[in-house]
Image 1: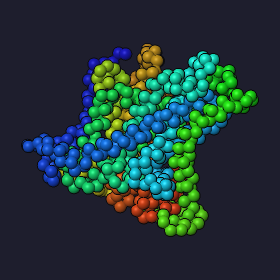
Image 2: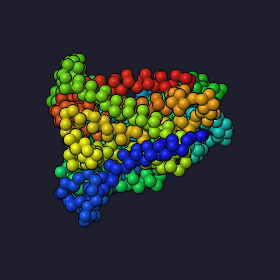
Image 3: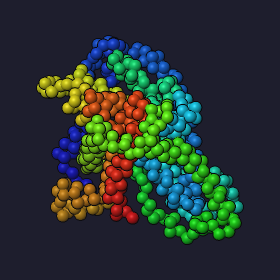
Image 4: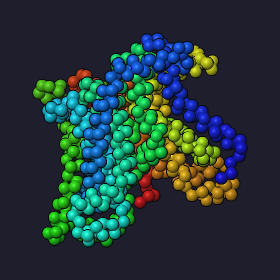
Length: 274
Length: 322
């Protein structure tokens, strides 16, 4: 493509400006976090005496060790289960084409754009009856269920596009359906499952509403839910709040830098697949 | 869930739809073996279906049921018919949340998609290589952090001593400074700005991916015909991106209508009710004011609103694809 030199310069300047707008907020909370706790610095100002100790304080005050443990527990409880049952359902609907597959697909797809606020009220009362309110399962169980529309839809899209001869060959072999699923189709579906795992992990880690409503103790919540509680307690101590926010963001940011290609690809496919 | 919401499937005919029916694919099982296979197949769907039914479909039905009662969450419930819906539509505060969420659509959806088209076009034209991929990575960053964090960060940036006012003062606009999220006139646009910051990267990267799939010959022939970049944009880029634009609109409209995290953290719906959106109001009604019936009626209206807004977008963006 032929593009004039002037356009290149102007275009790149525009992009640099856009990037600056994206990054400046992060820089602002970093410089703010380094000011003495309890002071009110201005938006972007490097402190004369950077208080790196604020991060240690925030780590202690926010109970970060426990929070990391809790969030990790929730992710590990949600993602593997959701992956297995979504893959099984996608397999049955997309490849086995069981009777009623079309109706099932419509039923699951119906939930794709459902706002969580739509069902949060009855979920609360339902869980109160089940006695799981204020436990981590209060987040885990509905989250697995809420991932089903997307998970089943995603895995079905993988299975429906498989060439027919793979299935036929496995069938002639006399493999049972269960064996066929685990020995042939799960390994073949690994890329699709991996992307889905990335998506579900990010969504779980960042889940706020369910944590806020269904679990009172921040130490039992997801990272985003804990951050909400932390803000509630330390809204007035801006440097400490910024330090805590950075700490809570850190795991996500590190993972994003390491796996950005995969994460971007997964999030994009996640929305385009259709 | 964050803004990464997704889009209903089109039932496009796929390769396997045209495949001759094997014994597995037969709709009505005729032999005993086929019936057994169908049964085994259903066992595969069962766990997912069960979870979905118990923790999504059941509460969904309950929301509709609650919306027809007056209930404080503890005592007995009284049947009130449709009067909760009448209240939502008559009470200016409750109806106001719906109007606010329409205004948010402008910020969350129209602006990011428009700016995303612009940014993606620029990247596509002048930054094909490493510069472009760095831009992509940086712009996408707000999409992976929790919305709560975005709300906290911007809550600080838009406060009186925050960065936004600092910059305004530096460029000589000192008299426009204010607590942007605490001012009746600016709170909603300020919340909208946070949404733009979060969603711009997503739209840009998605549209850019769509652009890179356009046949370069189309651009070449437009240029040979002497098309300006604007003509090229209107006649080549836009029509080819119809599907991607549809996806962007769907995701961002859902993010706007179902907004909760950012608003809860940055303004809590205030000042007054100026940034109250249905999600916040449902939370307040159900869990703080114990008006479960009213909260549920608003929830039903919110869900209907999402469907009504999304369906035409889906239809338009997919019409050539089947």
